[in-house]
Image (cartoon, rainbow, N blue to C red):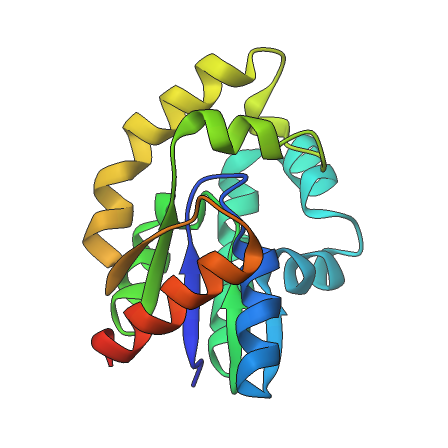
Length: 165
């Protein structure tokens, strides 16, 4: 079973913080986007574009199931909470919602292929927050402020996990 699962909007640092937390714990890290990519033999973004969001979410739930079977810190895609099946799985885990202001998220989003943000990332990110915030809150064991550098966020993350367990 996973040691912790990180959820949150694009740019909150799920992958970065999963790597940092796993390194501090001396365990593996599993990224559901990487599991999905290996399964469908293309990047998660390419699969989403070519097969649509419904097929993507089905593959994402399968990737989450596989990741949760590992003794690891799990980084998820930002939209993992869209699926009822994924939310049920996340509720059974120590799930951490990494969150920060949209301005911080937008500053971090220069990197990576983010098809759901499209040509209007400010509006798209605001819409994603409105759509997903209740789901993040519903499945999270705890919420951590993800603003700051890796060391600052890691310290808050470790502290929150001590309390959550």
